[in-house]
Image (cartoon, rainbow, N blue to C red; front, side, top):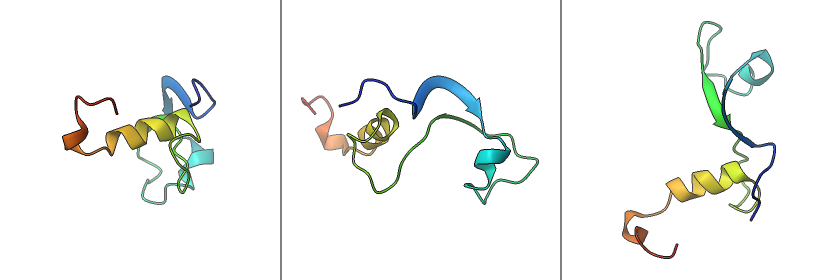
Length: 67
């Protein structure tokens, strides 16, 4: 499991012109911030951000277990 990588900074970053084309639903007037860059079709070991997203997707029944 990665402990750090460039996908996750823990600091808010503003979606700029470079990233905006990846998010067609954002308009030029939108101000959108993100913490990490999720990589679709990869598992939780691919990046710190993917690990966080997979943890959010866990079923409630797994709460307070070793998972």
